[in-house]
Image (cartoon, rainbow, N blue to C red; front, top):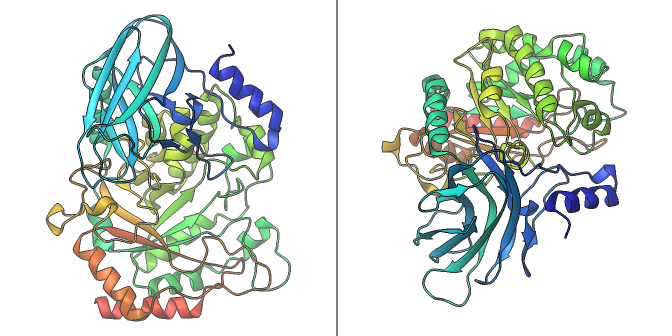
Amino acid sequence: MKSIASRLLGACIAIGTAHAAFVPDFKLKPDDVTVLMGVDAELGEGLQRVSHSSHGKFQVAGWSRADQSATWKITSDKAAAHEVYVLVKRANQQPLAFKLDAAGKSLRCSLPANPLKWQRVKLEGLLDLPAGESTISLRLAAADGAPAFNAEVHAIELVRPEVRTAQEKRALAMRADTAWFQLARYGMMVHWTKQSMPRSGDAKSYDQAVADFDVEKFADQMKSTGAGFVVFTTSHAYQFFPGPSKALDAILPGRTAKRDLPMDLADALAKRGMKLFLYFHLGAHDDADWLKSSGFWETDTTPFFRNWQAIIREAGERYGDKLSGWWFDDGSTNYYYRSAPWESLAKAAKAGNPRRLVSFNAWELNNPTPFHDFCTGEACYDPRGIDALLTPAAKGFYPSGTHAGLQASACLISDANWVHASRDTPPSGPRWNADQLADLLKGFIAHKNVPIFNLEITQDGYLSPESLAVFEKAAVLVR
């Protein structure tokens, strides 16, 4: 029988590089968390791999019977005892039972009924794994004796207890103060990218569009919304940076700009009492040149994350205190399955400003790492946050659940799309009127949950006047 890795690699070759996939090495990491993705397992009958994109890895759905299983073959350089966690979601509050078999031992755990969606469940006891190869098998069942249930599994994690404890301690020591973030109350985001189209006609080259961007007008518009900071997108579907970057030039020339737009933005916003964040995506399936040059699909992630850190560290050191935050996308669906070196990434992201806020987007999944400062809350429109866990008494920090201890934030689409990529059309209008938006803002502010609202922006810097007017009126109502 072929190994899981060889079958995954064969599938990638069969469908071609345009739809490549990352193939893990299935080796235990003695000094880090080892992530075994559900989609990378040998799956039993009825289990389905969920995919929302060609570069992300999501969950396994269809868990409904006790005889279904997911199996991984792993190797270890030396024997060690590990904690085991299962990242699971239930369709309802039905209690679940877990059983994991490996190396002649079984670990079990029961998950009682509760309203939480995605959860990180710790199995009871430690799993002693020998040196060499081991087979790990996971089964689920209804803990109440029912013949059927409905669950999904994202991954399992294996980690030595002392490693987990030490990591959490170091992560807490790196956390930045979010007091200013809460006082800012809310922020605005724009996906101004290589894909952005002007209101009419052909798009300019990226370098020319960066050169022509009207920073002062844009900063005035952002100030009118009442927001305290702006998240400006760098890379998204394609790897480009709107300023100089020796690190990116060394990896893939022709993707930077002569003008330093982030520096100009930071200065213009600062004059108006606002701060700058940058959004960054590690890579996307549309950008074949970047995927090849960066080592995006390589099983050995060392070169890829070395490239990542070089780009991010250079930017952080250049902008220093002028850059107040990083918003890294696909934390749980792209970084996570690579068992990313989170601590090293967080240190690179805080280069030049240890007070800089950093987050790796979890989307609707579990928190991927303790090494960041806030929960992004993508598409969470409830001021009480994910799973409605926040109360005003929590003072903006999740008291429990998968994001426990993190500052709450949310990222919402205010118009129709993240990116304005349509030709010869204006940005779409707002989804709320001023009264509705003001009520929503009041709820977020009361819970110290900091929302970020994405507005469509054209390549020539045009924003919907209707959307701007709604935010301006809502800001007055909130004040």
